[in-house]
Length: 248
Image (cartoon, rainbow, N blue to C red; front, side):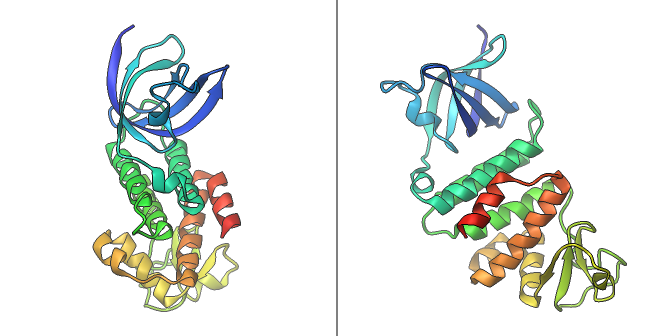
């Protein structure tokens, strides 16, 4: 069978038959694709440790009739700090689920691959805050999809927004002035500090964002706005977000 190489991240995996696994892979070169790892569930399987969820590997795959076959795996780095931490695992699941939902099969988007790879690496770092890194991921994926929220002017009437408490509307795609926000719009309130942080995130200033001290209440506001914006445009509830909300 003809073979090809790919830089791949394991997004999902499903047990199949007695010892196989079907993997959903995000690859830099070929986008999202499904492949089967034969006999990878056996105790003595050589590639088993390299096919854990969220791991990144250099893979050789063979073209198959229905599914491509994982022939060789060379693991890059590790995800031990994710797999050993419930919260980090939950946020890694969010990253993987979003990537799975927004990408079409065999349609490579290098910016999305790099964002996913970087976020997984950050989530595996015990010195970083998983919630903040996941929030940054949400803002960046919204930007790549063309749905970054409007934070400088009112999303309803285009009036410039002051640094003041506002209403965030997923339907209209951003913050609303006092007049537009009074019309029973679905959404959530955004404090002055949350609006400032969201603007830093939208500007792409990660160095400044990483230096910010984000208390739980502030993170709650930021997450609520970005999660609602993403789910509205995807037109579906994400299981990983429901799980994250449950463990909070």
